[in-house]
Every structure is written in C-alpha cells, then in structure tokens.
Amino acid sequence: MDDEMLKDFVVEALELASNVEEHLLTLERHPDDLEILNAVFRAFHTIKGGAGFVNLPAMVSACHLTENLFDALRTGKAPVTPLAIEAALQASGFVADQLNELSNGAAPDSLASMPPELEGILTQAIEGKTDAAPAAAAPAPAAAPAPAAAAPAAAGNAPANGASVMKDGQLDWESMYNAVTGNETGAAAAASAPAAATAAATPAAAAPAAAAPAAEAGDKPAAGGGGQHNRRATDAAKEESIRIDAGKLDALLEVAGESVQAANQASVLLEKLQQFKFEGTAAALMSTLAETLGRASRYSSELQRATLSTRMQPVGRLFQKFPRLVRELAKDLGKDVDLVITGAETEVDRVVVDSLYDPLVHMLRNSLDHGIEVDRVAAGKPTKSTISLHAWQAGSSVMIEVFDDGKGMDPDMLRNKALAKGLINEHQALTTDEALQLVFLPGFSTKEVASSVSGRGVGMDVVKTAVEKHRGTIRIDSTIGKGTKFSIRLPIELSIIPTMLVRCAGAPLALPMAVVERVVELPENFDEVGGAPVLRDQGRPLPVHSLAGVLGYEPGNERVGIVMAVPHPYILGVQSVEGTADLVIKPLTAIHTNGITGTARSAEGELVLVVGLSFLLDNCRDTERAAVAQV
Image 1 (cartoon, rainbow, N blue to C red):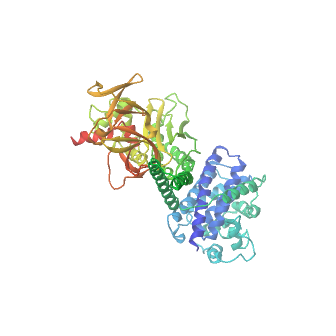
Image 2 (image 1 turned 180 degrees about the vertical axis):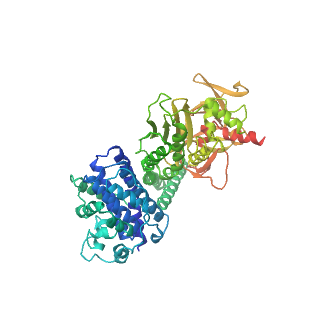
Image 3 (image 1 turned 90 degrees about the vertical axis):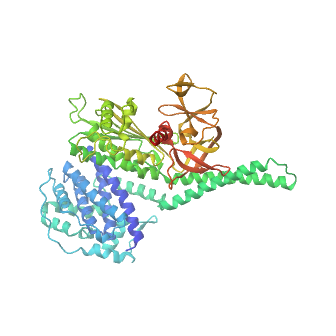
C-alpha cells in the first residue's frame, strides 16, 4: 500500500469524522433537518469508499451500517430517535479512534474489528427501535471480504472500466473504490464479516441496506438536490488549499524571522553610515543602498506576516470536540447542561490550539462536576444549566472564557482548605481574588474523596502550567450563587510579540506591550504604605517595584516608571526606555530563570531578555516568593 495514499486518506477522513460528530449533536436538537441527515450520509459514504480502497474492513463495516441507518432516516423508513443518535455517535467514535491510531503510526492490519455492541446498536436503530436491547453474543468468525482485501493490489493499476479516480487534481476516494470493486453494489460486499452476518440475520434491515447502493450511484439526496451543491463547494475548497507538513512551516517562519532581524540590523548600520558625508559616486551608491534596503525590509516583513498567517487556525477546530464531551459527561452526572460556543472563528497560532485541549477539558469537567448544582430548582434556577465557551481577539492576544452559571466558589472555604493542607499560612490569600487563585496551587483540592471526575481545583496547577508555557495567563472570577468564570489570555502569535525595550542595571530587557499602559517619571523620594514605596498616578496610589530588584540585579538609578495595565495596577521602575520593537522570541529551554521566558535580538544585534507576561500580570510575585523562600 502506498503510505502517502493512506496518509492522505486519514487526513481527509479525520476532517469528515470531526464534522460528523458536530452534525450529530445538532441533529439531536433538530431531528427533522434533512440537510444534516444528507450531510452525515455523504460523510460516512465517502469514508467507506476510501477505507475500502486502503483495505480497512472494520471501518468499512461500521461506515456501511451507519450509511444504511442514515439512508433509512433520511427516507423516513426509520425515525430519528435518541438510540439512532447514540448509535451514530458510537460509530463516529469508532471510526475516529481507528483513524487516530493510523495517524499515530499503527499498521492497518493491527486495527481492531468492529465491536459486536456497535453492530447491534446500529442494527436496532435501523430497525426503528427506540431502546437498546441487550448486546447479542459475538457472531462466529467468517471469511475475510475479498473485495476490500483486493483493493490495495489494484491500487497501482488503472481502473479496468476506464473510470477516472481523480477529481480536480485530487484523489476521489469514492470513485477509486467504485473503480476497484467494479460497481457501487460491491460496496455492500466490502463490508466485513459481522456486517454480512447482520444482513442475513436481520431481514428488517434489508430494505435500508438495499436502498444504499441506489442512493450511492449519484450521491443524490432523496429530497432535493443539495448534495451536488455541497459536493461542488467541497471540491472548490480543495482546489484552493494544500497540506503542508507543520515542520516545514516552522522552519520557514524561523527563516522569515531571521530575515527581518537581518534587515533591521542593516537599517541600523545604514543610519550610522549616513552620518558620514559622501560625495559623487559614493553618494549615489548610498542612495541606491538605502532604497534597496528599504525594499528588502518591506519584503522580509511581508514574508514574515504571510508565513505567520499559514500557522493560524480558528479555535473552532478545538471547540468542536467539546459538545459531545459535555453531552456525555452531563448524562453520566445526571445534569441537564447546554454548552454555548461563540467566537469559534477566532484565529490563533496552531501550537496554541493544540496545547489548549487538555486545559479546556479539565475546566469543562470541573464546571460540570462541581460548578453546576445537582438540584438547581432548590437554588431558584432553571433546570437546564449553561456553560459558555467564548473566544475573541483583544489586540495582540486571544481571550478564551469558560463560564458556568452554577453555585460559584466560596473564597473562605478555599482559604480554609489551603490552610488545612498547609499550602498557605494565615497571613496569605487575604483578599477574595487571592483566595480564588488558590486553586492553582499544586496539591489543592476541595474534595475529600476523589471521583472519576476531578473536583474544582484538582490539577488546576497543571492547567496553569500549560497556559503559561505559551506565555499565557489564566484567572478566576466567581460569585457565590451566580457562577464561575475562567479567563485565559494567550498571544495570537507565539514567535513574534510587540515589546517595549528597557534597560535595567545596564542589561537590555523587553516587556510585552500587552501589559504596558504608559511611561511616567519617577521622583527622588516616594511615599510609603506599610514600608513599601508608592506613587500616586491619576489619583490612585500604585505600588512601585524595581525591575532590576525583582529580577535579582543590582538596583541602580531608576527614574523611569512603566504603569502596568494588569488587574492590580502597579509601576515598574527601570533605568531607561529605549523604544519599541516586534521581536522574534526564542524560548529558554536549557535553563529556568524567574521572570524571564525567552531571548531575542535587537535591531543592533544585542541579546535581549524577554520578561514573562504571566510574571508581570502577577505583580512580579513569583520572584518575590522565591526570594522569601530562599531567606
């Protein structure tokens, strides 16, 4: 089998499978939506064709039965029942699991066969039953299907009947499968032994099964011609996109970043050269050089922006995985929960999208388990609760909020739990906000007995670590009786950030512009509150921190203050401000330095240390706590 062909099939089928799950959850709320019924039918039909061609008999069996089910549903031969939705979700999950195994390097012949339970629930749904009967014993093994096994052998040959297996320059899995098997009717024969046994043992399923090939021949919905329109739209989308290995994009981005840096350094050198007097030919050459460098700088910046855009992905790619998770967990917990998703089109770096799955799953599970009340009527609330997942762009950051309208978090209870576990002393977490953030401490838990679904706070330190790994921050706001909101803030682009360049104790540093409000002049002497320096800014007394001091440098003559735009504003004292710049950030991997998350090169080529966003948002407390611990 051609490995590239298998890889192409897996990528396309995974996309179809993820869309199917979303369609099914929508269909559960709108069972009469014929367009969704047709879309799910087409998706399983297409996956089945590709699976048969690359010799995945178990997947062919599952898709074939599910295809029969949706042919029956869309033609009215079977009703859209909760059992039908559950059966389709199980089939979708089975297909997705097999595709993920293949994506992770598993050999096709190592995949499991279709479970008898899945075969049984699909058959019952096809028969129009509303409740699942007890699972039947597994059928006796039968001979392997010949057409599917023969498919790979024929893969490298031209179709005997002359049919085209290409469509607009792309492999058409459906046509390829039909060409290899001879005709559409062969699709039924490609089903694995369990599917064949089902067809023989359950005459009631024969009508939907027989109807499938006829529908497949033109892939035309029973009512309306929407199928052809959707197919053309899909083909047009394929023409405008190609798949590129992520490693190649990363390498391209690094080269683009280095080119911008080189162009900036060249511009600085040019400015220095222009301070000298040139005449005649030398002056003309300098003028030409300036023009050429200007073009090089513009083009390198455009290359960088274009490369960055290829790494951007909508968070909806991540969000679409959560409706089913919430549905199943709410069902297990006996709660009626509606997940509302907004802002799915918000784009962020693909690395951020990939890294957010586990943190968001943990927050959703905690909201369901501990946030949502069991008896909402007693709390004076509607029986159906709501969890909102919202994303939007804020400047150079993306904001993601998870809000539940549950019972909220009691700061006094959190504080007492932390005290009892020895995580804090009686002088810490005195404010409500500080008490809420205690759930991020390692080892913190509000549950006396562990359950299959972790309680709010369990493992939240891991969530915070995952977010801060990508220079992000996470905060909690909660009101007793109203609900709890988790807010995540992440840079849209991981490798390049707008910064303010400063100098402390002679060292060049960069502060993320996302938290810089403005620059003020610092006086010789400060007022003090509790022995700590403060400065009145716009009528409010703000604490003043020495950036050199909190980073462990020798404090110098700091007469410039930067007002930090954070939840609890303060002023950061620095030696001087040297302008702003978009820097290509390289994370620190070999060493860990409190407050520093990466390095960059200035336009002059000087190595610059980048101060962490979470460190600044936390009022530079991380280093202060570390210093106290060392004392």
